[in-house]
Amino acid sequence: MNTTRFKSLILSFAVFLMLALSNLNPLIAQETLTNGTIIKMSKAGLGDSVIIKKMQSPKVVIKFNTSIDSIIYLKEHGVSNGVIASMQDVTALSANDAIVNEHSSDPIFMHPSGIYYYNQKNEKGALQKIEENVPSSVNGSRESVYFFGETTRSYCMNGESANIQVNDSLPVFYFYFDEDTLNKNKLNYDNRAHQITSPNMFTLVNLSIKNHSRCFEGGKATGTGFTHESAVGISDKNKVDFKWEKIRQGIFKLYLLKPMFKGEYAFTYAGNDRSGMLLYDWGIDLRDYRK
Image 1 (spheres, rainbow, N blue to C red):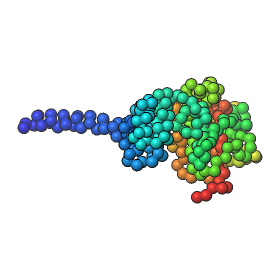
Image 2: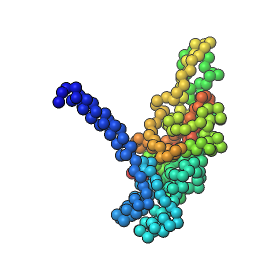
Image 3: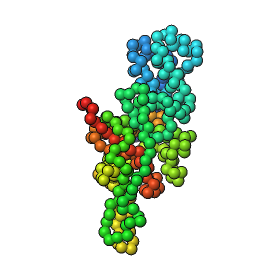
Image 4: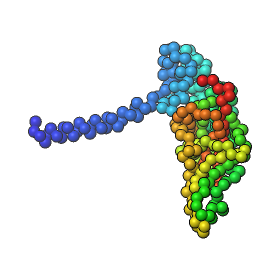
């Protein structure tokens, strides 16, 4: 075999390998669930909770047939009523991800747009909506920065504690961004900023108690007596890191990276104007918490 032909074969093999690998990841990342898959899982003795959790995974493709004849067939082959009901729910949800079900305690269903605390210990009222708030005072605002030196801009809310207190050091939250109801539910910053579509547009802050108010630092202002410059942005010392995963279109699950201490917190969204900052405040009260 001459050198030119050998190089050509090597190049062809390399291209084939790259194409094969590029097509492999999607196959690994997603599975397809069908009626036959559910029957197989049921006959293998897997419990309802295991099967239902698999249905709810964002990494599966749902292809269920929930016609009357199919439901009867599923029942005859050992699939429980609970699993069949979940198959119907997931099928309906897959057909229209924008279905809004504000009375459901299941977080995988679309709810009115907003931020919700998910109480895993309370099955009946698992989701609790966190209502929006605004700063009651802004210290160091633009109107008061014509001075020499530097001042810290801080945002405060009335009261030493939020209405919602959670008894959990690792709380879980769900963010719902339903495009059809965003405007109705005010998660669009006074209709002046672009619509909120991702948890990336929020910052979680730790609030400090000052003069019966909950506050955090939101930037610095420097003055020369006649002019001033403002540096917006929440102080790093107030920020709390979090991660999120997309459950399905418009639904995001948010969780914290490490256990939290008792205290007051808020998700903040500023839009295009810090003076119009929106706050979604809550607190942690671990008086009855057991490790």
